[in-house]
Image 1 (cartoon, rainbow, N blue to C red):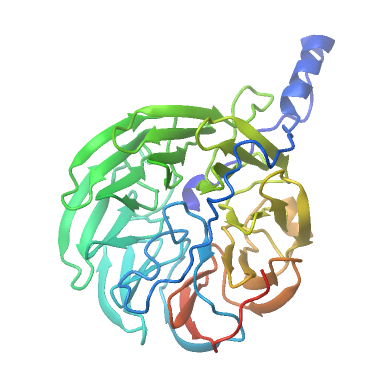
Image 2: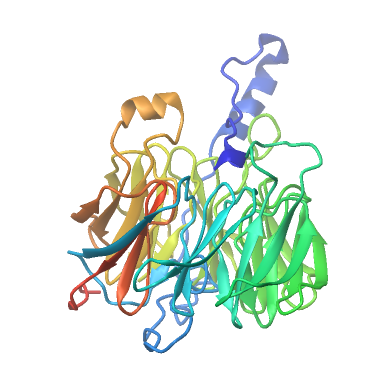
Length: 439
């Protein structure tokens, strides 16, 4: 959060001496790009992102990574629906911008200013913890008996610290003993674990593939700017985006570029940045940009398949489920869009800005509101509370709300519990077994 509070570039007055022709060029460059998609072009219907069936109860990694799976679908395989009963909560003493991972009987949680918790998933008691004095704005990933976490520059967490460094660390998931550490510039990516490799982006304009057991660098790829998004994986390809407004598709084995695509230019000639992590579904890559546009590219070709301007500042990733795309904006709206065409199925007004990605579970969409996010003008219009809100995926009608919530993806889960992240608190709930919402 702290490292990406940037003003969207804008110009209020056209300078008269540029002339009429130049003014027309500037105006056209500033208009948001809009393109309607098709269900017949690069729409792979057998690439449904809903993971079915849910993992068995003895699965040691019930929620292993940010967005649940390698495609970052933000779709839960578990059949939980409210009302919920709280079973435990903890105070992390500072901001929790990203949700935890769940594995090996623990909930792993990174606090923004250097604390890391391994919590017993049943009781919430601390099994082990770390205090690194480092900033964090990412989720952990668990696998192979390890928990991986990205860290940024030392506290205080302000952008542009000269000579700032960071690292990815691997700890033993049960004991917290450090196994390895890979050093670089600050790393904001939530690690992606796939095929014995760990993929992250860095402020040093590189994407790295690391050996997940040793931390040894396998390859690196240079981008056009800082890489603060997290990687998604599909079809032996890594998808990751930069602050330069560029989305990259890289060969997962070699790091070679398959294709790149860009957001639309602003009238200053620069591009707004990607902070939202890409979501891969139906053979397409879905990613929102801080220019307020939802972009969709062919996962194999990189061709722009559709683009929808939605308002201001898309900061969080999209959840893609049942041929719908669910995404929120800083001007206080939640959208359900047709995954093939980009057409609006429904939209609702939210109490405040939507900073994070929604999560879909059992036919319901969970999203969090952030009263302190967005511009002063946006906050003046939307003065609603922070919280977690649950609506029906088919029509956007509200079914439940909880006062905890703010920045993080609102919910992760395992076979027995639902975990909701507040501004500085982590909550665990139990829910009665219920039949899923009609799909």
